[in-house]
Length: 330
Ligand SMILES: [Zn+2]
Image (cartoon, rainbow, N blue to C red; front, top):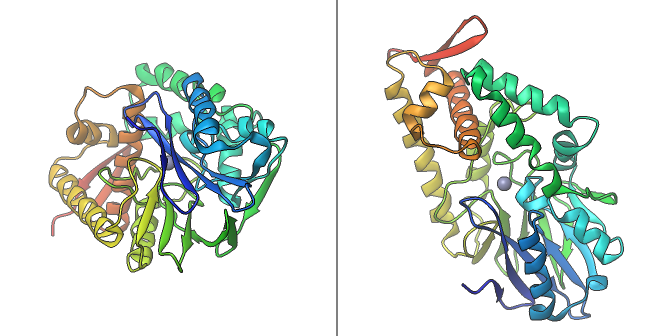
Protein backbone atom coordinates (compact mmCIF):
# COMPACT_ATOMS: atom_id res chain seq x y z
CA UNK A 1 0.00 0.00 0.00
CA UNK A 2 1.25 3.43 -0.90
CA UNK A 3 1.31 5.28 2.41
CA UNK A 4 2.64 8.74 1.53
CA UNK A 5 0.86 10.19 -1.47
CA UNK A 6 1.39 13.44 -3.37
CA UNK A 7 -2.11 14.89 -3.90
CA UNK A 8 -0.88 17.93 -5.85
CA UNK A 9 -0.90 21.65 -4.94
CA UNK A 10 1.66 20.96 -2.20
CA UNK A 11 -0.70 18.58 -0.37
CA UNK A 12 0.61 15.22 0.82
CA UNK A 13 -1.53 12.51 2.37
CA UNK A 14 0.34 10.57 5.05
CA UNK A 15 -1.37 7.38 6.20
CA UNK A 16 -0.42 7.17 9.86
CA UNK A 17 -1.00 3.62 11.12
CA UNK A 18 -3.53 2.88 13.89
CA UNK A 19 -3.72 -0.25 16.06
CA UNK A 20 -7.50 -0.46 15.41
CA UNK A 21 -9.72 -1.86 12.64
CA UNK A 22 -9.69 1.61 11.04
CA UNK A 23 -6.03 0.84 10.11
CA UNK A 24 -4.88 4.41 9.55
CA UNK A 25 -5.66 8.07 10.03
CA UNK A 26 -4.86 10.57 7.30
CA UNK A 27 -2.48 13.32 8.23
CA UNK A 28 -2.06 15.99 5.58
CA UNK A 29 1.20 17.82 5.04
CA UNK A 30 0.67 21.10 3.21
CA UNK A 31 3.89 22.59 1.82
CA UNK A 32 4.06 26.30 1.04
CA UNK A 33 6.14 27.80 -1.78
CA UNK A 34 8.68 29.04 0.80
CA UNK A 35 9.20 25.47 2.08
CA UNK A 36 7.24 25.95 5.31
CA UNK A 37 4.99 23.09 6.23
CA UNK A 38 1.60 22.88 7.95
CA UNK A 39 0.42 19.54 9.29
CA UNK A 40 -3.25 18.62 9.74
CA UNK A 41 -4.05 15.87 12.29
CA UNK A 42 -0.65 14.22 12.94
CA UNK A 43 -2.05 10.91 14.25
CA UNK A 44 -1.94 8.59 17.26
CA UNK A 45 1.38 8.10 18.98
CA UNK A 46 2.77 4.60 18.44
CA UNK A 47 6.19 3.38 17.32
CA UNK A 48 4.77 2.54 13.90
CA UNK A 49 3.35 6.05 13.59
CA UNK A 50 6.68 7.65 14.49
CA UNK A 51 8.37 5.45 11.87
CA UNK A 52 5.81 6.57 9.27
CA UNK A 53 6.67 10.20 10.00
CA UNK A 54 10.38 9.46 9.52
CA UNK A 55 9.46 8.11 6.06
CA UNK A 56 7.29 11.15 5.38
CA UNK A 57 10.18 13.55 6.06
CA UNK A 58 12.15 11.80 3.30
CA UNK A 59 9.28 11.33 0.86
CA UNK A 60 7.94 14.88 1.12
CA UNK A 61 11.40 16.36 1.68
CA UNK A 62 11.15 18.58 4.74
CA UNK A 63 12.79 18.93 8.13
CA UNK A 64 10.93 19.24 11.42
CA UNK A 65 12.14 22.82 11.85
CA UNK A 66 10.08 23.80 8.80
CA UNK A 67 6.79 22.89 10.50
CA UNK A 68 4.99 26.20 10.98
CA UNK A 69 1.68 24.96 12.42
CA UNK A 70 0.02 21.75 13.60
CA UNK A 71 -3.69 22.08 12.91
CA UNK A 72 -6.34 19.77 14.36
CA UNK A 73 -9.83 19.07 13.05
CA UNK A 74 -10.77 17.59 16.44
CA UNK A 75 -9.42 16.21 19.70
CA UNK A 76 -9.87 12.45 19.19
CA UNK A 77 -6.70 10.54 20.07
CA UNK A 78 -6.13 9.18 16.56
CA UNK A 79 -5.85 12.78 15.30
CA UNK A 80 -4.46 14.64 18.30
CA UNK A 81 -2.14 12.01 19.80
CA UNK A 82 1.08 13.04 18.08
CA UNK A 83 0.50 16.79 18.33
CA UNK A 84 2.75 17.27 21.37
CA UNK A 85 5.39 14.91 20.01
CA UNK A 86 5.49 16.80 16.71
CA UNK A 87 5.48 20.16 18.47
CA UNK A 88 8.58 19.13 20.42
CA UNK A 89 10.35 17.96 17.24
CA UNK A 90 9.53 21.16 15.37
CA UNK A 91 11.04 23.28 18.12
CA UNK A 92 7.68 24.57 19.34
CA UNK A 93 5.31 25.01 16.38
CA UNK A 94 1.91 26.05 17.74
CA UNK A 95 -0.94 23.54 17.81
CA UNK A 96 -4.18 25.06 16.51
CA UNK A 97 -7.56 23.69 17.58
CA UNK A 98 -11.01 24.88 18.56
CA UNK A 99 -11.69 25.96 22.12
CA UNK A 100 -14.12 23.08 22.64
CA UNK A 101 -11.58 20.58 21.27
CA UNK A 102 -8.93 21.96 23.57
CA UNK A 103 -11.18 21.68 26.64
CA UNK A 104 -12.21 18.16 25.60
CA UNK A 105 -8.59 17.01 25.26
CA UNK A 106 -7.88 18.50 28.68
CA UNK A 107 -10.81 16.60 30.22
CA UNK A 108 -9.86 13.31 28.59
CA UNK A 109 -6.11 13.32 29.15
CA UNK A 110 -5.18 16.19 31.40
CA UNK A 111 -3.77 14.88 34.69
CA UNK A 112 -6.28 16.96 36.66
CA UNK A 113 -9.49 15.72 35.01
CA UNK A 114 -8.73 12.36 33.41
CA UNK A 115 -9.82 10.28 36.42
CA UNK A 116 -13.14 12.10 36.80
CA UNK A 117 -13.90 11.83 33.08
CA UNK A 118 -13.21 8.08 33.10
CA UNK A 119 -15.51 7.60 36.09
CA UNK A 120 -18.24 9.69 34.47
CA UNK A 121 -18.01 7.60 31.30
CA UNK A 122 -18.37 4.37 33.27
CA UNK A 123 -21.27 5.84 35.26
CA UNK A 124 -23.02 6.82 32.02
CA UNK A 125 -22.52 3.34 30.59
CA UNK A 126 -23.79 1.77 33.85
CA UNK A 127 -26.92 3.94 33.64
CA UNK A 128 -27.52 2.38 30.22
CA UNK A 129 -27.14 -1.19 31.44
CA UNK A 130 -23.43 -1.82 30.91
CA UNK A 131 -22.64 -4.76 33.24
CA UNK A 132 -20.78 -4.09 36.46
CA UNK A 133 -18.42 -7.03 35.84
CA UNK A 134 -17.21 -5.53 32.55
CA UNK A 135 -16.26 -2.16 34.05
CA UNK A 136 -12.58 -2.86 34.87
CA UNK A 137 -11.85 -3.86 31.26
CA UNK A 138 -13.44 -0.63 29.99
CA UNK A 139 -11.53 1.42 32.55
CA UNK A 140 -8.26 -0.17 31.47
CA UNK A 141 -9.14 0.47 27.84
CA UNK A 142 -9.76 4.17 28.50
CA UNK A 143 -6.52 4.57 30.48
CA UNK A 144 -4.62 2.78 27.72
CA UNK A 145 -4.83 5.86 25.50
CA UNK A 146 -2.76 8.09 27.76
CA UNK A 147 0.69 7.09 26.40
CA UNK A 148 -0.68 7.37 22.85
CA UNK A 149 -1.52 11.06 23.34
CA UNK A 150 1.61 11.98 25.32
CA UNK A 151 3.34 14.32 25.59
CA UNK A 152 0.46 16.78 25.43
CA UNK A 153 1.14 19.95 23.45
CA UNK A 154 1.91 22.94 25.63
CA UNK A 155 1.58 25.77 23.16
CA UNK A 156 -1.99 25.74 21.89
CA UNK A 157 -3.68 28.46 19.85
CA UNK A 158 -7.43 28.62 19.53
CA UNK A 159 -9.26 28.67 16.21
CA UNK A 160 -12.68 30.31 16.35
CA UNK A 161 -15.48 29.22 14.05
CA UNK A 162 -15.27 31.22 10.84
CA UNK A 163 -11.59 32.11 11.31
CA UNK A 164 -9.29 32.21 8.30
CA UNK A 165 -6.55 29.61 8.59
CA UNK A 166 -3.48 29.51 6.37
CA UNK A 167 -2.44 26.07 5.12
CA UNK A 168 0.51 26.17 2.75
CA UNK A 169 -0.09 29.12 0.41
CA UNK A 170 -3.88 29.04 0.58
CA UNK A 171 -6.43 30.42 3.01
CA UNK A 172 -9.17 28.26 4.43
CA UNK A 173 -12.28 29.03 6.42
CA UNK A 174 -12.61 27.05 9.65
CA UNK A 175 -16.19 25.74 9.51
CA UNK A 176 -17.78 24.44 12.70
CA UNK A 177 -18.92 20.89 11.88
CA UNK A 178 -19.90 19.32 15.23
CA UNK A 179 -21.55 15.99 16.02
CA UNK A 180 -18.77 13.45 15.55
CA UNK A 181 -16.77 15.47 18.06
CA UNK A 182 -17.59 18.64 19.95
CA UNK A 183 -15.91 21.65 18.35
CA UNK A 184 -14.97 19.69 15.20
CA UNK A 185 -13.60 21.89 12.41
CA UNK A 186 -13.52 21.45 8.66
CA UNK A 187 -11.22 23.64 6.57
CA UNK A 188 -12.77 25.03 3.40
CA UNK A 189 -11.09 26.72 0.46
CA UNK A 190 -13.86 28.00 -1.75
CA UNK A 191 -11.66 29.07 -4.70
CA UNK A 192 -10.34 25.53 -5.14
CA UNK A 193 -13.44 23.73 -3.87
CA UNK A 194 -11.15 21.96 -1.42
CA UNK A 195 -12.27 20.73 1.98
CA UNK A 196 -10.32 19.07 4.77
CA UNK A 197 -13.29 17.45 6.49
CA UNK A 198 -11.69 15.46 9.33
CA UNK A 199 -14.12 12.81 10.55
CA UNK A 200 -17.26 14.84 9.90
CA UNK A 201 -17.86 13.15 6.55
CA UNK A 202 -16.02 9.95 5.62
CA UNK A 203 -16.19 7.82 2.48
CA UNK A 204 -17.19 4.18 2.90
CA UNK A 205 -17.68 4.31 6.68
CA UNK A 206 -20.17 6.22 8.78
CA UNK A 207 -18.57 8.62 11.25
CA UNK A 208 -19.24 7.61 14.83
CA UNK A 209 -21.67 9.84 16.73
CA UNK A 210 -21.39 9.24 20.45
CA UNK A 211 -23.05 10.53 23.55
CA UNK A 212 -20.34 11.01 26.17
CA UNK A 213 -20.17 12.85 29.49
CA UNK A 214 -19.52 16.61 29.27
CA UNK A 215 -20.24 16.53 25.52
CA UNK A 216 -23.27 17.64 23.52
CA UNK A 217 -26.56 16.54 25.06
CA UNK A 218 -28.06 15.42 21.75
CA UNK A 219 -25.03 14.86 19.51
CA UNK A 220 -26.98 13.13 16.76
CA UNK A 221 -29.34 16.10 16.37
CA UNK A 222 -26.31 18.38 16.21
CA UNK A 223 -24.58 16.09 13.74
CA UNK A 224 -27.58 15.84 11.40
CA UNK A 225 -28.01 19.62 11.49
CA UNK A 226 -24.35 20.20 10.67
CA UNK A 227 -24.54 17.72 7.78
CA UNK A 228 -27.46 19.68 6.42
CA UNK A 229 -25.40 22.86 6.60
CA UNK A 230 -22.47 21.53 4.58
CA UNK A 231 -24.46 19.45 2.10
CA UNK A 232 -24.57 22.22 -0.47
CA UNK A 233 -20.89 23.23 -0.34
CA UNK A 234 -19.50 23.02 -3.89
CA UNK A 235 -16.74 20.60 -2.91
CA UNK A 236 -14.48 19.38 -5.73
CA UNK A 237 -12.05 17.46 -3.51
CA UNK A 238 -12.72 16.31 0.06
CA UNK A 239 -9.76 15.21 2.20
CA UNK A 240 -11.12 13.03 5.02
CA UNK A 241 -9.55 11.78 8.26
CA UNK A 242 -9.84 8.13 7.21
CA UNK A 243 -9.91 6.22 3.91
CA UNK A 244 -9.09 8.11 0.69
CA UNK A 245 -9.82 11.60 -0.64
CA UNK A 246 -13.09 11.67 -2.57
CA UNK A 247 -15.14 13.84 -4.89
CA UNK A 248 -18.87 13.27 -4.51
CA UNK A 249 -19.19 15.08 -1.21
CA UNK A 250 -22.87 16.08 -1.37
CA UNK A 251 -23.86 12.52 -2.30
CA UNK A 252 -21.84 11.16 0.59
CA UNK A 253 -23.47 13.60 3.03
CA UNK A 254 -26.93 12.52 1.86
CA UNK A 255 -26.00 8.83 2.14
CA UNK A 256 -24.89 9.33 5.76
CA UNK A 257 -28.14 11.11 6.61
CA UNK A 258 -30.12 8.26 5.06
CA UNK A 259 -28.05 5.75 7.02
CA UNK A 260 -28.99 7.42 10.31
CA UNK A 261 -32.68 7.58 9.35
CA UNK A 262 -32.62 3.85 8.66
CA UNK A 263 -30.75 3.06 11.86
CA UNK A 264 -33.21 5.10 13.90
CA UNK A 265 -36.13 3.25 12.33
CA UNK A 266 -34.49 -0.10 12.98
CA UNK A 267 -33.94 0.78 16.64
CA UNK A 268 -37.51 1.98 16.98
CA UNK A 269 -38.71 -1.34 15.56
CA UNK A 270 -36.56 -3.32 18.01
CA UNK A 271 -37.92 -1.28 20.90
CA UNK A 272 -41.41 -2.78 20.81
CA UNK A 273 -40.05 -4.42 23.97
CA UNK A 274 -38.32 -2.18 26.53
CA UNK A 275 -34.52 -2.44 26.40
CA UNK A 276 -31.55 -0.78 28.02
CA UNK A 277 -29.00 0.92 25.79
CA UNK A 278 -26.67 -2.02 26.33
CA UNK A 279 -29.33 -4.55 25.30
CA UNK A 280 -30.22 -2.53 22.23
CA UNK A 281 -26.52 -2.18 21.38
CA UNK A 282 -26.14 -5.96 21.39
CA UNK A 283 -29.31 -6.40 19.36
CA UNK A 284 -27.95 -3.92 16.80
CA UNK A 285 -24.24 -4.75 16.71
CA UNK A 286 -23.98 -8.29 18.11
CA UNK A 287 -22.13 -9.61 21.14
CA UNK A 288 -18.71 -10.26 19.59
CA UNK A 289 -17.32 -6.74 19.94
CA UNK A 290 -13.92 -5.92 21.45
CA UNK A 291 -13.92 -3.44 24.35
CA UNK A 292 -12.79 -0.77 21.89
CA UNK A 293 -15.65 -1.52 19.47
CA UNK A 294 -18.15 -1.84 22.30
CA UNK A 295 -17.29 1.62 23.61
CA UNK A 296 -18.10 3.12 20.20
CA UNK A 297 -21.18 0.94 19.64
CA UNK A 298 -22.66 1.64 23.07
CA UNK A 299 -22.08 5.39 23.06
CA UNK A 300 -23.43 5.50 19.49
CA UNK A 301 -26.54 3.57 20.58
CA UNK A 302 -27.07 5.95 23.50
CA UNK A 303 -26.79 8.94 21.14
CA UNK A 304 -29.50 7.45 18.93
CA UNK A 305 -31.74 6.67 21.93
CA UNK A 306 -31.49 10.21 23.24
CA UNK A 307 -32.30 11.53 19.77
CA UNK A 308 -35.36 9.26 19.51
CA UNK A 309 -36.44 10.32 22.99
CA UNK A 310 -36.13 14.02 22.13
CA UNK A 311 -38.13 13.41 18.94
CA UNK A 312 -40.89 11.79 21.01
CA UNK A 313 -40.38 8.44 19.30
CA UNK A 314 -39.31 6.44 22.37
CA UNK A 315 -39.96 6.91 26.06
CA UNK A 316 -37.62 6.27 28.95
CA UNK A 317 -38.23 4.52 32.26
CA UNK A 318 -35.72 4.34 35.11
CA UNK A 319 -35.42 1.52 37.57
CA UNK A 320 -32.67 1.31 40.22
CA UNK A 321 -30.60 3.83 38.30
CA UNK A 322 -30.80 2.00 34.96
CA UNK A 323 -32.69 3.49 32.02
CA UNK A 324 -34.74 1.48 29.58
CA UNK A 325 -36.47 2.67 26.44
CA UNK A 326 -39.57 1.59 24.59
CA UNK A 327 -41.07 2.79 21.31
CA UNK A 328 -44.13 4.98 21.60
CA UNK A 329 -47.21 3.66 19.86
CA UNK A 330 -48.05 5.87 16.92
ZN1 LIG B 1 -12.72 11.25 15.34
